[in-house]
Length: 194
Image (cartoon, rainbow, N blue to C red; front, side, top):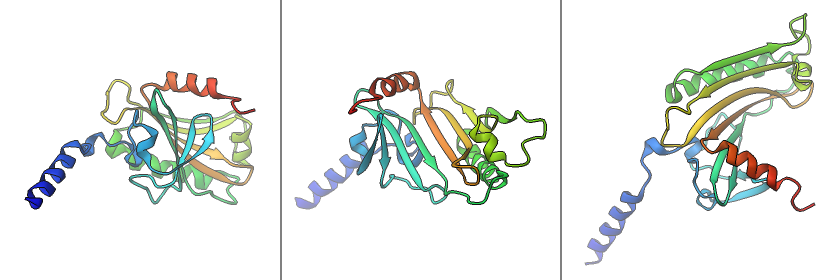
């Protein structure tokens, strides 16, 4: 009798298990309650570092979510390791290119690639300084809003970012369908605890 009960519990668990197609980035689905993510560290403004993402990725070192009680997870961000001595941005741009290519099989071709430089010299010398002053950017974007994906992902951005004038890092951000509500909650929580 005990064996039948164990099988019934096991089958009930399988029935509640989330289909693989609906799992979002790092095993996190948009709208999922924060309590389902395991141990997290709050970083303020609705942001939380996920200490052990359900499905980690070895190319990215940190995963954070933005989550509010009435929305659940509404944004997921991950970052690459830092690239030291990369003032030209060569290494971070290559890493962004590589990451974008890894996303294509799951999300399809990117919608837009933005390569911007507001310098007549082409931002060749000290590209990260131009990024810091908003004169240069390197971005891949996917707009999936018309797809109504089961994981809730609506927009994806891969950005080459400047940590400082010589250090760079790739940021990967997934936005859910409730991004406007998420941003409103984030703005409302700004300054709490001051």
